[in-house]
Image 1: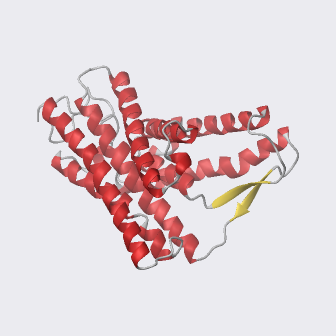
Image 2: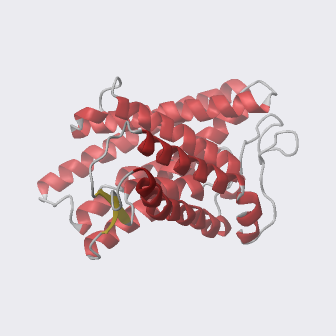
Image 3: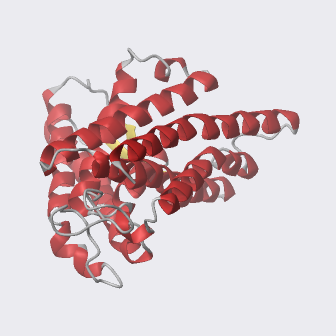
Length: 301
């Protein structure tokens, strides 16, 4: 397809992502109200994942329209284990390093690790977040749209294409999230001027960065799952202020820990990838996206 037609496909895909998951979301709310489904029940938990599944279905259809495959965007079963281990290493930092650093600047037990009750609701939420929502949303955003946008940008300079693709996708899915929150009545996350809303944008940028560094879509997928439903909790044992130097230092240190894990992924993560033939299409000069013209390449795969 020529570039203009490719841009049309992107616009069509974005429109579909804005419309159809939103329609499914409204249908889910109507169904839950009609049958009086408790939103925290097991059925309610899985019903809430249907809009995300719709995102996955749309991304899959457009992926096939382009004659791409899952491996070309870094999604295949062989990458699941290192993607999960990436998040486990992050959790070690979150539940061990962060509370420890806080004790350096504050009194002991300033932050406490709490354990969620293990019951059917916990299992349902864990499955929803870790095996449905995270994977579906990242496949639709960083997996398909980021790669597709990168493939049609006219410049041959790789870094500006990657930066623009990451920023654009983060901004678009921030808008998608805001529209859903607006319908849900979550006022603090439905105002574009809200600081929390722009945190969603920054989070999306960081997930895009991790995806490009690791070339593994399971990394941002499981990171999103960790944010959506952490298996353990952190509770405040003794008071502190978010503007304190100690807290800011701890958060920055945790952020750099994630960067270290990401930038050493090629050493520890790549050897763990099953079926380990290199299928990356990170560099446009080296390989072309299946079924497309020479300029249609992906930044990660």
